[in-house]
Image (cartoon, rainbow, N blue to C red):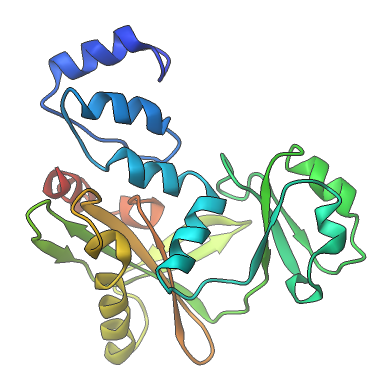
Length: 239
């Protein structure tokens, strides 16, 4: 089946031929998943995908849940970059939607950087300016949850990036057992795994800071879980 995501005839064919539907990345239109959910099982739910595909909504959700995230500001226009707080520099300007693997992102070392050029580089689209956060290393903890509340948590993996793209995942991560246990506890407490059975699985990412772990949960299994064949088991568990 090959068609546009919003093609209702194709969506009908998909729902007629499948007992359940899932997606491996967050940029599938949430409205299409919402329509499918009225005809068959859909995991993750459209509500989760709608949040995961929009950095503005995602940050607001995490903030409302009381989770620690990097200081940031919504950038709706180039002029907004001139008036943001000074503590957002150095920072990274990111597209709110459709940016990944370093795409749609510009590092701004100071407030004197070429802000207009940075705005143009992200396509003049709604964005988020995030303050740069120094860290020692990044680890991921994959968590899966069924709709009836059963939960599986995997060992922490250490992520190495090159040019803003995940280059290597090392498992188990080269961290102490105490840090690994803390990361697992943070992952299990992430809102996408506890707040609602509508969101049955997630990838919780914890970044090792000085001197604490900072949680950055996301709703979708992503590159740091792809190396393991069990990532597909995670999808089956969620469905």
